[in-house]
Image (cartoon, rainbow, N blue to C red; front, side, top):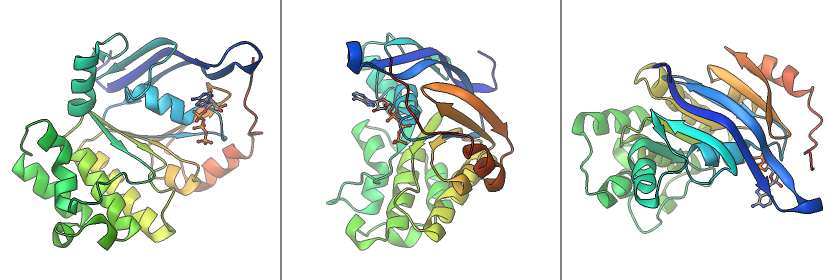
Length: 248
Ligand SMILES: Nc1ncnc2c1ncn2[C@@H]1O[C@H](COP(=O)(O)OP(=O)(O)OP(=O)(O)O)[C@@H](O)[C@H]1O
């Protein structure tokens, strides 16, 4: 694996169901994700975006093929090393924030590290908190925060362990445009200034416009990619899709 590649999918296939009901959610996806890059995955509903992301983040197992994260082949790992890799090397941001309601923002942010029995690197912790703009909200519970602030807590939680790669599944799907812009600017800054590697799934051409590269999925395959995208260019490209999922 080249050093500028942080994660790799090699001929990934994911088949759900059997016989007539069989769905090829991923149908031979091979792709490298760049280190220090934001990659957006786009495509019509049912094209396999979430399946690809979940397989890459070791949250789901492909039917066949390989996933490599930061030099480690994930597929075939036993449960314990897999849990450790997921905990130490991978960050995940969900559309629905997934914060623990009884914990404060600060406690939510350090929860994965606390579970692992690790302390955050103090300088990095301060940088993440200040960059995401949460310093004066750390003692608040999630229900005392706006949606955008809750998602910023989730972003800080994903980044505070300095993961090799962060996966974000529709991170702005539940946010209005101004809160979305805040999250996307933060993710972009993490990539440009802190050399993080981020993969986001999005339906939103404006969100994809923040990425360095956009991958387009259709019917479980990568059908196109775009470097240095803009929202307009992405929108044009999306008009070419018909939104159908292939069944075999
Ligand atoms: N657990 C499952 N069992 C059966 N089929 C599934 C399962 N999960 C996903 N699929 C099917 O696999 C295909 C890809 O689903 P996936 O959720 O990855 O698509 P997506 O591009 O993320 O869609 P969306 O944009 O709607 O979230 C779809 O046809 C879906 O119906």
